[in-house]
Length: 182
Image (cartoon, rainbow, N blue to C red):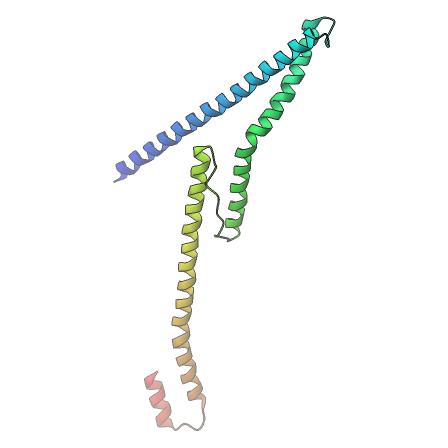
């Protein structure tokens, strides 16, 4: 049994590592494509500016400076738009996690329109977790309610016997009967 658990653990770790590697490759490709497009756009714009005579003097030095500045600006803008959705999803998960930490087990994440498989799985697993926590909370509430009822009934009976035993007008025989019954 222990070997089986270790085998399952190794398989899960391998699957997680494979997914992480795929995610890193996809992320690297996205950055590469963004930077390549940025460089191509900036180079094209710089060449147009040189040919139109907007940039004059030593075209290589000035062009390089313009090219670098525009590349940084365009790369930043493109990264902002491309990275916006994954960051929004992570923020949503963070906010929902805070709600659960405060005891709100009704928190739910939308699993639709999440492009990254890992983030979609995370949202799904979060929803499964909150459903399980909510059902556990219902069981806990029911247990407390039932246990409370089970304790109240005998305590009420004991309280009734104690009240009767305190009455002074009871004969000794009735007191003895009450003690025996309790």
